[in-house]
Length: 392
Picture 1 (cartoon, rainbow, N blue to C red):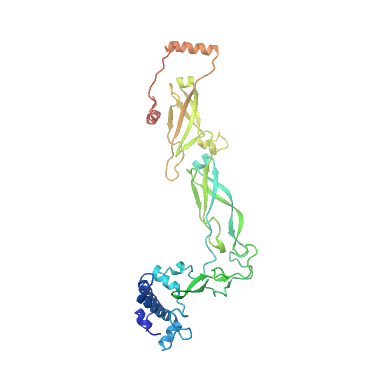
Picture 2: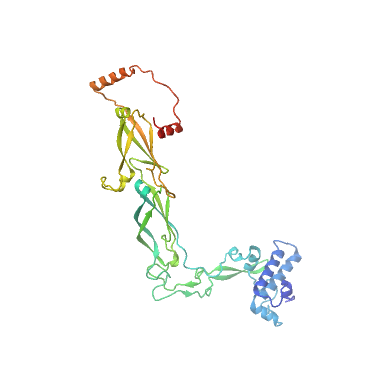
């Protein structure tokens, strides 16, 4: 070649490959026609490309150092047979990511890859969600093939190095452009980029290294979960292709409706209906607890299945009473929510003659035979809650 490649790139004669590549990248960024369209710069860019081709190829570099023509027999000159790597130019502009920009990889891609995560739905009752439970789940996912142990080859055989790419997983592709013959790297079509071929695939998994199977898992649902909570089971998802590591399994909890209680955050709400006379005179009732759902025998002494609820004399319909610490345990903390009981007064709709007579006597005694009624502004939510905590 007409110029000393060492002088063109500005490196010493004992420069290593990394130094040569860095020098080339620096000059290519400065002189590339897309950056600097000046014709003189274009020629300079060609010289840099020829110099890099010589010094990056051990055989051509050796031939130049011995005084020979590194392009002898190849037609000589830029764009006439030397075929510099387009990846190197892309490296100069994208910081070493030219392979990705040109559609090429960096060596063979592994057969073993991580499996996908899986998501299943689990419905539990309110008591199980509140106090925790353990459930057995049947999961249909991809598992490791036991015949080939995940490598995809039939017993007695093994993957072989691809003869097309010689195990590199990628092949050179040459095309002509205004820059000359540009060489790019593409995944090998023969081995699909793996660098190896399975001549005798496993009959059980067809060379994938995994098969579909149904298995049973034990899932521990922590206390305090609510609808939408996801429990992660690490590495219990699908096994990856080629026997790769399994993904994670996520169990999404759905809490079924309860016949008595309604959950709001960590609080439980329920409604108690009492007769008009009980609301006026006061009474005490046994209020069932959520713990009662945990035992088949309600007479068990290990779990408190009911608590006494005092309905004070004169309790009005719609009054709310708060029982502290009888709600749902906190999922990520300590303590429990509250149980809020709303009292509804049941006014009789059918009276016999004697009952009607007694009520009329009571109305006369209370001077309520012809009440006018009282119109007032309804209480706010804050007033109702304050009244629930401070009942009269």
